[in-house]
Amino acid sequence: MYKIILFLRRILCTIGYHRYIVAQELTNRSRRIACPYCHKSWGMNDDVRAVIPWDYELADLYNNMLGIELKYLPWEQSQPPIKTVKRQFND
Ligand SMILES: [Zn+2]
Image (cartoon, rainbow, N blue to C red; front, side, top):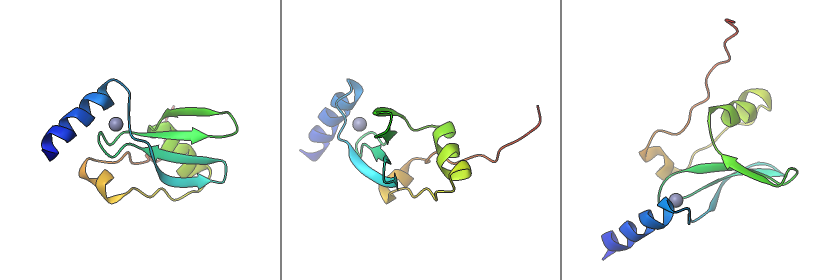
């Protein structure tokens, strides 16, 4: 039964009906939200009223530029979380 529910949840995720939970409060005006079923995460900012997919650039912005330590929830570790990359000034 649990597998059927999980399967249905995955279908809902595929069509965009995620279950959003707050994964980490980044600042008092922004946070990272995630879906425990598909393990996707997004950055949410109150000032610009935007929710955008969590990617390397967003992780780099919060970690390297704003100095916020990113923490991933245990279930997010079951697939590789997005790691920040050191800035390279080769070009
Ligand atoms: Zn989802």
